[in-house]
Amino acid sequence: MKFQGVDYYQIDDLLSEEEKMTRTMAREFLENEVEPLVAGAFHEEKPLDLEKIAPKMGQLGMIGAFIPEEYGCAGANYVTFGLICQEVERVDSALRTFIAVESGLVMYPIWRYGSEAQKKKWLPLVARGEKVGCFGLTEPNRGSDVASMETVAKKTAGGWVINGTKQWISEASVADFAVVWAQTDEGIRGFIVERGTGGFTQTFQARKGSMRASDVGELGFADCKVPAESMLPEGKGLRAPFSCLNQARYGISWGAIGAAMDCYETALNYAKEREQFGAPIAAYQLVQLKLVTMLIEITKAQLLSYRLGRLMDEGKASHAHISLAKKNNVATARLCARLARETLGANGISLDYSPMRHMANIESVYTYEGTDDVHTLILGQDITGISAFRRELSGG
Image 1 (tube, rainbow, N blue to C red):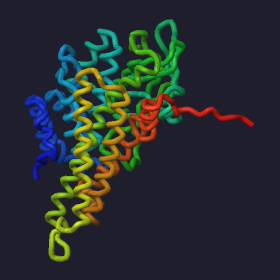
Image 2 (cartoon, helix red, strand yellow):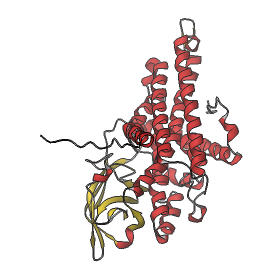
Image 3 (cartoon, rainbow, N blue to C red):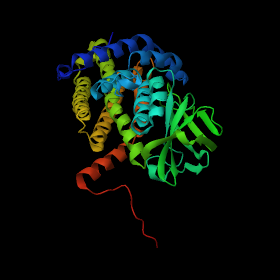
């Protein structure tokens, strides 16, 4: 059965025809060409083939949708980008991760902080799906504490020398280039490091229980020499990478709705068909409670992301607004995956159905781009004016 959408509060009435048309286009492409591949890729931990998929997504304007048209992108609004993320994550979180990384963590920093030459070189290539980038921020010993990153870039006569390691990097082993953040004497700076650069290694990370259809890995820098023009000239300090994370977190808030909707629809259809004790299980109160709970939480999440998208388009959204939507909507997807799995009973653990796969994937989404706890602290600081990120420990 083709997906019809979940829209209990008629949110579609608030969308433009162009926004709905883009969503339909993305949905049809994903259902026809990607969805049949996902379960096998997850089971075998064999990442989806981006060499085949990315160019097709590029042709449809799905990559970097909100980047201006002058750089070969769709120039769409943030609501449209959100709807794309929603449709992609309904199929699998790994592919929405790709869209969010390319758009918010690779293209956005080049567009916002790069030179005109960097923009003209890389943005059209990524938008068309001809090149894949990755975002090097998280480290083995430094996740949320970005300010203490250990990767260092030293200035030399001919450019920069980078040393360090980045871990849990989406598209790490297949990326044609990386946007890497490092400590310098000038503060934290971003660099574009191309595949094949001496001292730059890219490794696939296997044995994952989550995001198994995604390429996740490690970036290594051992006296990695890059030219001076590889640095993003306008990006300096923590504000730069954090602004990129906000773009990706926004996409996650919509993507999580997609995963939740798929879980809800799967559970609803199953409950109406599965018979026990002489009646469909949808006839029983406890099953209806699960379905109603999912619908309520999905509807609230939809309203949150819709309003956030309009605020983004008006330039009125704050980082705390984005944190609230990311925190709430990922928790909603987590809840819906669990309730859907319960509704399917023993069949719920089978990869013939999607909830168990979504349940595994959403654990990564719950942690990356700011853990749930970090978003709680962001919101807490915003409403109280008091930061709870650090504690001064007394000696004694």
